[in-house]
Length: 357
Image: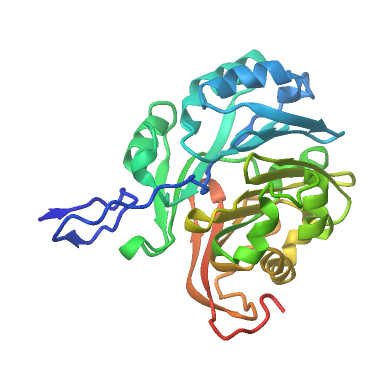
């Protein structure tokens, strides 16, 4: 008889007999790292001075490559072989899926900050529980090793949010430092709340368009047909289709310092989609929730809302109604440094009602 740790991605209940070997597949749930840097008025471009080639050197330690790059007046956007990197002058958000080793970039990131005359003031590492934890590489084999890796570089606090029994969807978060609550109108991106949907058990008919079959034309056609072209206004979308299946896009806004990003793992046995944005319109949480659910039609999903100190707080303690779905779990947390986080788990009502109507 053994007892598994609450840091593990497995069932923390007592295990009486060996479980059958899990089916393997691509690990869609991402590791996410958001880092705020101290502003330096003498170097206003900050980390945007870093070239694509130099970002790739950093990402070599993560085991992913830059596939595409777009920029505007506000930020640089990189579509990665495993997810996304967004770079503002004094903030970055990077998320990587599969068996990438995201936390291995931390020493290099500190070096880049020093080279460009700034330093890290606040950091958030987060992820949901893995589908295939046994396939992960160190330091991502479990949350305890991830926390130990983070604490080699940063003091901080670790949290588990959500039901951890029976492999239910739950979320791991590590926060370090404190953020400046002064809102600089030129750097509003540092105070934007974020809206993140992590979707599983996707409708096969919705996933079919993310395979390169005989009907495939190009990634732009997929973006338009699935409905992402109109999900948020004024967005320049940089999209990529993978062989033989899979899809990623980054979108950056022409009128404000915001983005959205989508990553699709369409195979039925491990289907997963993430949608994330920090756009102003995300404050209309229920409306955006309906639109995203209608595009991807998940069987279950988590909604994670995050509001940094000094931002408009979009986090909610009460369940957000969504037609066709039941909210099975909700949490409202205030974490170190003033970060507010709400988490909701939804499951599809098996009634045949239109999703997100």
